Image (cartoon, rainbow, N blue to C red; front, side):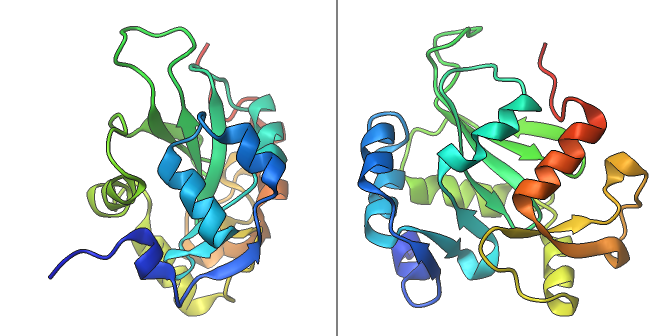
Length: 201
């Protein structure tokens, strides 16, 4: 059976928040992968993959770089998971160890203040999403998400499941402590409590 594309998988199940403004499309064309720009144009910003991923306006999450060091340029937050993991696109115009570094997706785990770079993204967005969901299930705490989804309210756009109190404030990593939180506020709380969520310096 042929694998469905991202758009085919989500066509009847995603929740559209808004069309992507033309200025945002123009700003990031040639900067973000073409396939992601195509999804923006046809599907907009919203909630995808049965609630597990949200595609967002990168400009609204630029503030997160007050707490996250950039290693490569450009570094652009383009989405996040239901558990608050930020999806960050890293280009290859900044300092690099080798010419092959960059043009990849990095995951920033806000709850645990960890990061992980996925392999260089050379294929389609669908290939990236397959790697994201299939190859890294443990890293993305899919078990925690599935349990949270059974007991907590459904997420709305701009929300994620987060520990209350946050782990950085002494909270415990128990599903009993997960609540629906505003994603931007959660980033601010964790960032202010630790100073640097990810320090690459």
